[in-house]
Length: 157
Image (tube, rainbow, N blue to C red; front, side, top):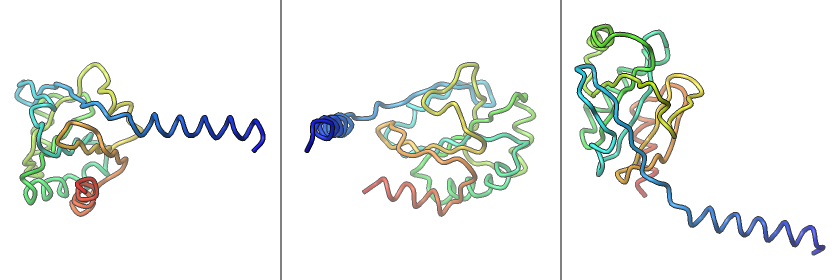
């Protein structure tokens, strides 16, 4: 190998070894639910968590709500959390969600970005958090109950 190739090879090897040894840090946030109570992501440590960002004006978000409800009903060991990404009152959000018989907590987005969840590329956006509190996957666009089951199954191995 010539000198340029050798240097590039060492750079790639070093980068790969650094990436392999880095372990994701647990993430956390605290937001208010629709009743004004503080809810922290860390409240659910030890469980898989599906964090779903939505808005009532987002038609794909509205279409996926029944899927999230079905997933939560059929997988009580996993916690779904909705985060309303719009500026509405708690009563407006509650009224909207009531039509779908939502069976999981919904939180109001805060004033500061939820890193590493934000910035969002679009709505809906769903993040999968493992029991250790690490974000293992992010998906932009609607999800189905089957899709969520496959994602979590893939990461449980």
